[in-house]
Length: 425
Ligand code: SPQ
Image 1: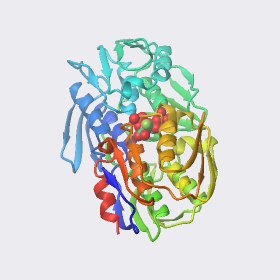
Image 2: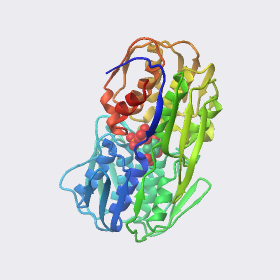
Image 3: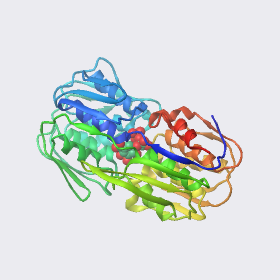
């Protein structure tokens, strides 16, 4: 697909539902007694993989697009699937489901696409095995496919080396089936949607600093969940409004949970003109409308505790840095190497092709911005966040940018190109 510069972006946009929250609503709904109704569910390929996995385990899930109805069967109501569970491209599905499956009374094999088969699973296998789970990597390479056999689980206290909501959530979900309390301490707090939503469904999860603790054997009860707009998707429009001259966008209903809002804090520090409107909080998840105008950006250093709050936004932050005056240093972000692609290598390669002064480091990137960028052929590596980042970069670059594998935006934002085209002048 080809992209060229535009004269400005104007109008209002409502961002599709949050991917992390959509996954969790289906999972917790399936493990609840009664029906869970989810509105503004993200109809992206990743969340549809989660639905397909639970349908394969006997859960009746109605998807009418306006709402999802999950007819939960309780903590012990899942049944053995007749084939390998397919988690597609979704790390969240793969890792969170593993925590749930560790405590079931039937064996399962789960597997995903080529990208999932390269992503590290030792990080969940180790704590789950410490809890007594029988989980192995079929090929012995600590990646999917994973085989999970029935086992009795016991509570542990686990200290994680990585700040990862997927690791934390897998352990907490296994903790639902353990015979004592289970807690996880992470080096820096990661997104806390699981803790908030598990409590809302009737579990007891306590959070203290970077430690989350779950008590065993609760009864989960179906709930109504209204999913906020995904801040990770809103990030592309925040960046676009900032870097394209003569722009003003009203981005509606964006989830601004403090464990996810690093993109807004960083954009403001870089000089972005962002105003919050209509802020409300629903069951611990705050949302607001964001009014963003064209801005003169400058480089900053991004590292430390803020990293988990913007980990998925670092590709689009790198694009903002390319259009900012001065140097931006991104550090403490080695986790970028184990996402859908190696996002440090892929961003560095593709931004260099557009004429940007960028160097990859072991744990981030150093970007000196301010030089005009030119169109290039971009290899998305089938990573949705790379494709969307370069679609935005092209709007403020000279010439034509061609994005290969552009359809991968379906993973988290199926209507991304239509929404973007509608706002272009
Ligand atoms: O689900 P997946 O494939 O891991 O998706 C990504 C993304 O860019 O959409 C990461 F590649 O988001 C993760 C995020 O990086 C979603 C997530 C969650 O919902 O719990 C947590 C983060 O991953 P991690 O490994 O830091 O826990």
